[in-house]
Length: 101
Image (cartoon, rainbow, N blue to C red; front, top):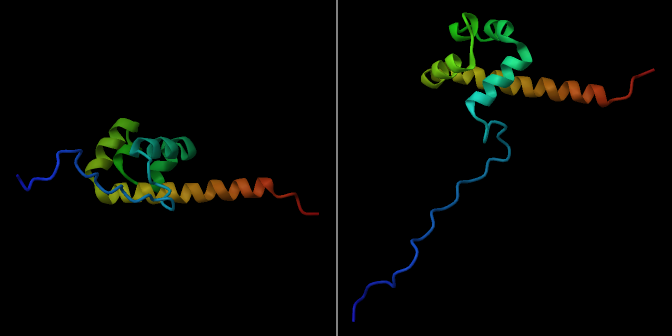
């Protein structure tokens, strides 16, 4: 007799914890940059986050290339995205409230 365990499927790795309170969870950097460019436009985006890829011949591709290599810039972009979400929610709430008399 041998002391080996019976052959079977390997034990499953623990599931990654869900992040229900993280608004960035599951979003790609491309989706974030695209949303910001749609909301603010490239010109205003270049003023809010003064980096060349937003100011000179801006494109999603050049922005992604730079932001993936530059953690401080990515952090600023993600912070601006969270601010944009709060502004959008505020606008939606104001539109849903009946006008005051």
